[in-house]
Image (cartoon, rainbow, N blue to C red; front, side):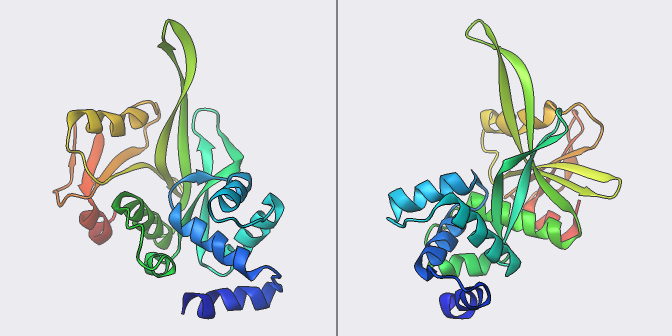
Amino acid sequence: MWNKTYLDDVVERHRVKNREALSALADALCSSVGSLTNPNRISNVLRNVQNTQIDPETVSNYIGYLEEAFLFEGAKRYNIKGNKYFESIKKYYSVDVGLRNAKLNFRQQEITHIMENVIYNELRMRGFAVDVGVVETREMRNGKSEYVQYEIDFIASNGTHKYYIQSAFSLDSEEKRQQELRSLLKVDDSFQKIVITGSDIAAYTDAKGIRFMGLFQFLLSGI
């Protein structure tokens, strides 16, 4: 049904010659929601894993077709301290998680990635522009000063409002908690920082000003 209803429309609209490659690309995007990628990387994955030959330029074109069909959206990667975008790499999310699951025949139910996709879709539905954040900082490692990058799942902006958001299905240990907070604490501006967990918790703000809330609380009441 997925192929008949959605792929056939894309193939017909854009006169796609390699329907099998388009379907394989859709599978790859469904499998990697929330993962940083680019056309070169996807081309390599399709060649090595699915034995599908498709060059990076065609991958880029096909992704554009799938986005135009409102099946996927790409979130750009933004360097917070450098105030610039990384143009060559994005995270892709399925516009409808149910369709994503159906395309994969309900395999690959990675709850952490699905939760991240749900949060992204909810932010977009509420009118936010959403980017993927990265914070670069210098740290001493093995006696050397090195640049280190820390990821922030989402930067959600709507006019003058901006939020830094981490999706953390579980904070079951202090180590995991610190791992999720580390990147947020590297951002030195005054915009709200939020951690959304998979647990059903009442929203609260810790001593460092970071707000915690459960996924259901976020979906029902917002940020």
